[in-house]
Length: 365
Image 1 (cartoon, helix red, strand yellow):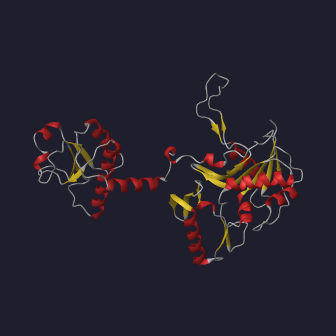
Image 2 (tube, one colour):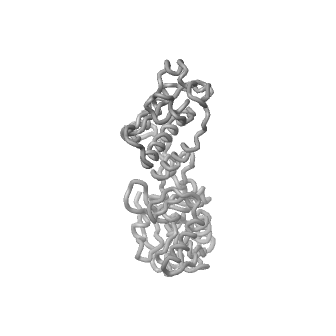
Image 3 (tube, rainbow, N blue to C red):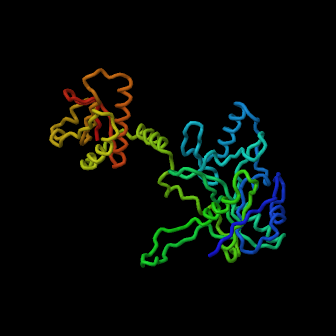
């Protein structure tokens, strides 16, 4: 395969209502059937009127931008200072919902196209029907990547080709059957086009020639196939947000004894799971079977008689008077253990410890 990446200069300023297909066809009369047209989403948004008016500067501009961001956000993924990583209503996870203030008047913000796949299909149809050239269309925007510095263009909308090349079931030269390999080829082509488009060169369109022999006769499923299903997403929140969600869930864990005696190995696994994150000196001790059988559980007033085990929780530095900070930290440690127990399917009830035990709290299981 021999690829060419060709710039399409001369498109100029794009305004609401402009015929984007005509602008591209006039700037690139050399387009051929089978070319892949890589189009920056910003000019698509401008032509479709996806702009909002905001103050030019000052706190009013920030407040207006926050309102726009909230409207474009389906779910907040992570927040660090002024940075907001969100999931858009399209399903894309990106900074500030893709809202852009560059290459536009200072009193306006550019939003992503409302339906990038539909935009790609419409642009492809217009080029085919009115300008007699059959190309695939990729609409792109810039994104960061988890755990990697720098930005790259990716596909938001696609028409005329598959977004993913699926190698599953193929056999490599060593005889191994590929089980998981699915290549996001439209993202790769988007990145290739960005190499010659740039951010300041006013070249919002590129052509990749040589990848396709011919586009699909239909438009295909679009870039929506690139959005990972929520059930398969192992990193649906930022670290701090996931931690906060876990603590919030632990705070509302059911306060009810288990209908059957808990697996004591599972209790020990839960204790071991939190041992490395609790305050130094905090200890969780599973009471021995003999003590449970001897009636220690039912000896505490108000303790449910059906509880079958307990964990003694001793805070850090028990000899020193506990101040507010120590109490908060110990409470958080106790909730961490309750969350770890819940992950093992074990409910727990926090209670004061039995008299004479060097513990600040107990969990009845």
